[in-house]
Image 1 (tube, rainbow, N blue to C red):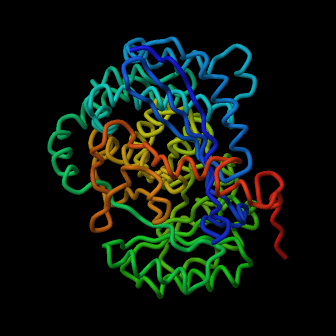
Image 2: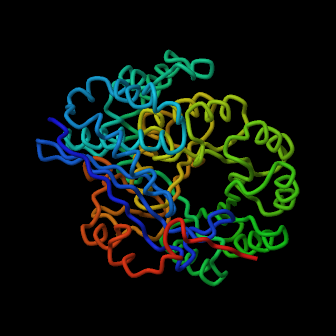
Image 3: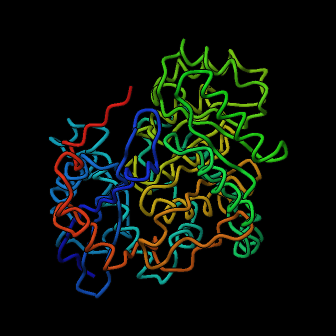
Length: 443
């Protein structure tokens, strides 16, 4: 089956109008995605997304279009034989590699994720099932080990997968009924207490018992938000906070020192995503508290995860489906987390990110680390109508995805209306509320 064309769509939703997704840095985000469609001569379409928050989606789109020229004309069979070959061809391009992580690695991931989507569709399997059914040796061979073997060797990874394989069938059977346990980010920074409470109550009625609130205001306001959230959900439910990298290490210590009374599960990204030494210092400073530190949704490569995990700097590993270079990178990260006993709690939200991370939650908890109540997969309760196959929830858990591939087929009307800048949602919107010209200032 040959790849015959590639198309990238700049998809943006003006979530800033209702302050959905707002945090200390991203004060008024417009949830967006660069959507890649790889068309084939066999009638199948490979789909992937790269999530952004408005301005810059076109930057990612250009990178994807450029890299896609390297796979047009290739075959799915070539990819399936050894996925690491395409991974290295893209990530190790002798000139593009100079750009390194960030936009470049995310664009590489878009291509790789679309190819995995095609493979799963050709097998008529959801992506998680394709991964679960792979032989352990094949999984290990998908990973670029050059910079990881000092933390996890291929032989160790194979042992982890072989051991999990002993009970894999039973776990798959159980999780086919009720998938990974979820938590919801309800306390966006720009929302009123009333709006947050309404979301919490709705989700509690649906079986959720784990919630996250954003912090990053002044300390007294943050403490008031945490106190409000704890009282709203009760002491028997899990509460996490997220600062979105807003502080330096010293500031983080000052703020986090006030969080002890609230029985938190984790404190997420209080400092920069790659400040491994900073996370080590924070973990040591607060080692007697109920909470641990979580990081990873902005970590741009498996090497950063290696340092965070091997050093013991974080207690929760937050992979993102599109921040690194696709399935191959995420495989490596989940296996490293399994070795060091750190629960994988994928970052979700955005446009269709939940559709992707549910597959990683399934694979991890079936075929790698096993099911555990410490593993939570993020969920947000808006923009689920963007795709034809929204995620399905029951009793605060994801239900096992059934659609072939990632399940990223967008509704045509949604795609048409939200295409930037020509879709009807954007065509009449003021310039100062669009893209790079949308500058948001607060006191």
